[in-house]
Image 1 (cartoon, rainbow, N blue to C red):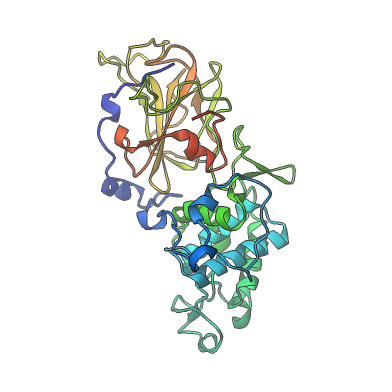
Image 2 (cartoon, helix red, strand yellow):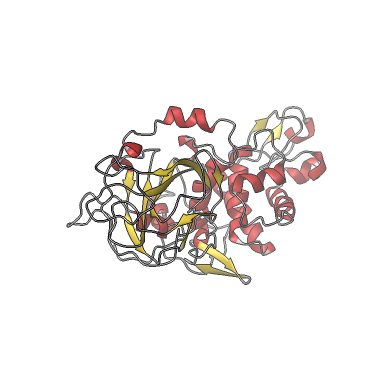
Length: 392
């Protein structure tokens, strides 16, 4: 289908320092590496330990009820008590019937507010006499969600299950909360002085939900039921991701015949809407030069022409970049624009280095737009509940 060549618009790596500077003050995104490190098992003792990475990649099925009294996996980023607090937050959401997207939002919020610790407060003497897991000093805030007196008594706010229930009660009242960016929803609940700070925890919160609740972050709420791996027609998985277009992959990632093919080609009719795979900021929205330096993207391309044609690069929390190539007309989004998961950003075409209508889709890690940052989009999207329906 396509063999996207390297063009001037895609040659330089996106340096982390530059990204950090650009994102300062931008709504929704903080791509901090500390908040996106993967969890790895350190063990609960011999053969009884569960492999967290295996759990995070398990086949999606009905959400597993969390047993907060049982053995839970241990993570390098969080201690046993913090993981148990995460389990309590998920269990409360399950008991209340809150969809799994809410569990991800709640965990990400508690990660930002307290690092999943039940914090007392040096300015609230009564809290120091109650069971706690650390001492904060943020006004008169207490507990996992750093709730202030309007949320409940000192003892109530220092009870993890109570604090989680109060968070969910307010969360579900936020209009369209399941489709809105995590950081925007969390901010509506928390009214934080740092409204952009929650987004960086979405990835690890999803991993925790998958590990503790049977892959539940891969589900989509459809007609009141959690459906696995169904985020492909504008539906958003609990992880916050959706497939850019429905359909199966034709040409795969770095195959034997095309080792420099740094993405996958998804066949679709010309004019098919292309959606942002996750909430992010537009890095690039332009016509890519071909091998001759031409920018003539308003016509169908051909094999060997070179370039992406009309294309968009999006930067997502966690340092992920997604690329969408060969659009039929100029993209619907502009550089530095914030887009939400599932938002239409363009339409399928055949501009640039292409033999027919399709979407060339790439995923890059570590803020690296070059080939060195590219990974296979098929397993990446499947792990987030937004499969591209392709054989690897």
